[in-house]
Length: 562
Image (cartoon, rainbow, N blue to C red; front, side, top):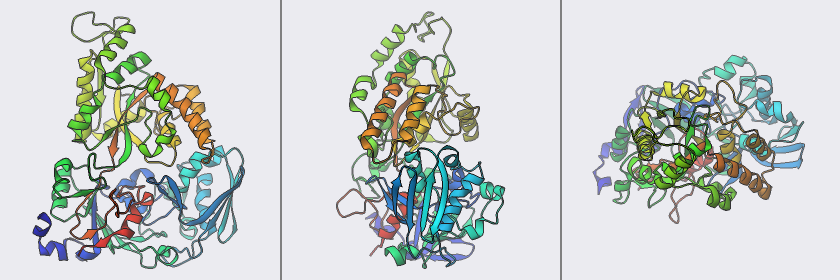
């Protein structure tokens, strides 16, 4: 068996050094797939850079709540409990025994200070709360925080912030300038979490277990690995080779070939059968509605019927992903899908229907070049893009372009470097492009706030990259934000209206669910999460923002291999 062929040296000692430090292999978890570049900072307020220091969020710094997408529920964390006393008052009770990694108490003053940074520094991502609805955060006593609202709370957004805003120690951060808070490196971070920063090098980040962690004393939880070493690989094939050799325990890289490796027992995944991976985010084709003919709903609908998503699933991903629901919602939020709307207005691969829609809207091939011209007779020549090096997406846009050309739409695929692609995305200079920022969330509002972000600005960094301008749907997204999370019927009603407009106009086209790439070998550590009976059900992900969505609990369930 392949496991028996892993060398004794690999099993008993670490095969890599960091500044001369040897890490005992049986105490060290090696991971990959989160970081793709050298660390820039350990600042929990700079969200966009956390991919390269994913442990900052969830391992070092912690939020008031965790979120379990498998069960779709918030888990009290730093908070012991919380309650809406009225529409204007939300009260949080902190756990007793919370401490920072330097041993000092974590109190209500730290929570209030963290939230109030958004009031004092408009550049912080959560400052909009104070503009829109939050009136005050008050430390009533050492363990009690009252959030008082000046307007109808955006319940959906507020709940989302409860597990995405990381609490920092007031005594350290209160001495820092606004620039240091919004863009400072924050070396040697001190949080409240189960792991502390240890070191980093050219190809890795190292975290060490905080053996004085409050969670062990209060919750009885203790992560099994003493060390976590996050390796950065330059290519996915290198990551796969290292995983198969037992040098990596858990890889969150996209690794082609899983469909062949898993059935033979070389590696394990969360699902024992295809697609092997849980759904992590929705891949959406954004169409630039400020450009012709993407400004025409009929053209957009014809394009949706032209795309062979089955071919993308099979060829680009080897069966490791599934087609997305036309509403874009991930499976754990399907209770908010209006099936009647989808039945009436949904789309699927149907080239004949695509050609029919084009012809009915006046798109015809007038010059015999096999490509349709616009109703006014003008030529159509479009581009679809994704970043160079994203091999699965590169194959996907090739298939999309090929599908479109087959029904008469002149579409070419292009792969600019990431910087050029990103600039075109937020500045609105592209024709069509893929994006997957619609990730796991506790609420459908997160997806629709991304897809229909507003108002339309010069730089659309928060979504709605195709600049679809529809006040009716903007109002509905706001209505959804203001609907309490416990009002499931109200949420469904608003989602139904959003989905009807979305599927009528199709300003963007949800295509497939990118997988929560996770594959592990159990030479050193066992009891990784999985769908089979007896295995833990936490998300097996080390990506930034996922430690508090099951990743930390996964560490506490791991067991040393025999």
